[in-house]
Length: 346
Image 1 (cartoon, rainbow, N blue to C red):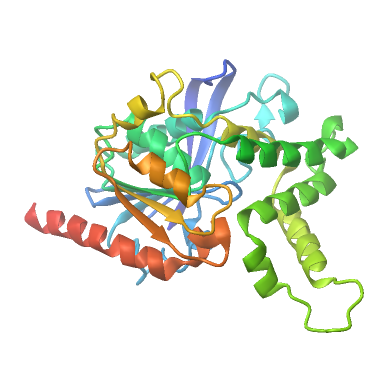
Image 2: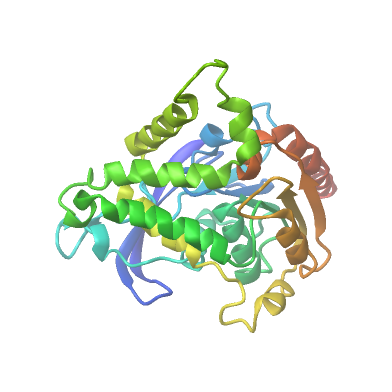
């Protein structure tokens, strides 16, 4: 996979009203130029990047299920992220300084519009298989609705048509953790909010996993332990790990991006919006997911015309979309075989 950057020189109007004077979009794809291959388009989750081989290594790579030698694979870094696409840590051309908290709030639809800019830049007319999990699933749903004649097949994994109050509560708690770090509001350095980011990450982890996953992995083996430390150390380690690679300002904005998702907004409601999807789709839930429960995904699936509903099993909650790659491979293989068959018939 090759990392590339595209500079969009026009004014980018954000859905909430803010305007960006030109944006940079970073993306990874199989080759520098598209030459008619079948297209696999993958939308990444909250703190991942466009380097899909890095965060989904069991599924993407040479000789893997999604092989860049066979398919033209594309993954775009989200608007507002800190992995190369314009975000709050980028330089505001009007001030010569980072945007910080003057960056406009962006929605999932804004993010999808930047992806479509890349699709048009590459000269891709159709996306043969669009895949997204979590906020990546939000993007895949919106893409299917916003550009219904572009997307031929799609998989919506561990996601929903509209953010729930339960998920918004987690996002707000994480934003509160960032804001409690006084360096966050000072906007004096891109290191601002690092301690708050560590805390925000640990809140998120509790929602991404569940009691079963923690109890299996972080159980104290010493029967006489007085103050258990294994789970506490794990939380601190994971908080520090994210703070070392991510940006508190991007995290704050992307948390609002999560909150923005409602496919029914301005479209006559969720059911009406989902009914416009033309792609052949599958909806994949995880039986232990706390933030996108299987029951809610089953309800959503009933509103998507002709979708196949599947539920995979995992001890690890929402993070199952990263860990249960054998089950996902079993679901995706028939789709790829169908795509290969259409390639042979051309």
